[in-house]
Image 1 (cartoon, rainbow, N blue to C red):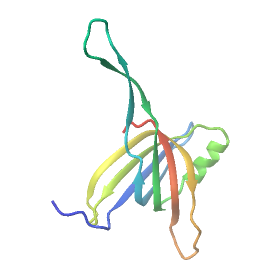
Image 2 (image 1 turned 180 degrees about the vertical axis):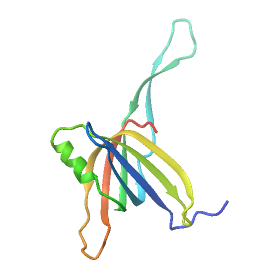
Image 3 (image 1 turned 90 degrees about the vertical axis):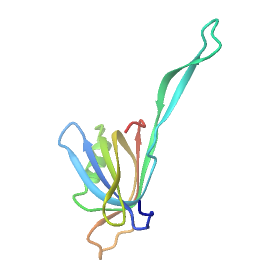
Image 4 (image 1 turned 180 degrees about the horizontal axis):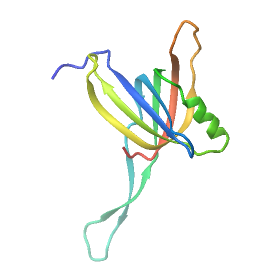
Length: 144
């Protein structure tokens, strides 16, 4: 196995599914955090038993954070934000693929049922052909 070398990146595909047409955008990000799951359990003891039993109670929500990226095709996030502002529920499916410095896929995560909670755009530069993104945050239920 080759050692980890700087130059790795994340390809992120964001698919929004409102009540109307499907929205989608793709970008490359240098930092992704919040890929995980957290569960809460309830403990129940039966009479006469010396051990406890754990029962699944609920999934804790997680926050997926995408940072320092560029959108490489049609940016549908602004359209999705307009729909959200109009009161339309837009859920996202997010596919995150980690690539090594040679461009080989290393690992893939799929997030279903995410909701956009924060978008921070960059300082705009007319000399760039791509739309940069400073930070995007999505809330999801921890399942992937």
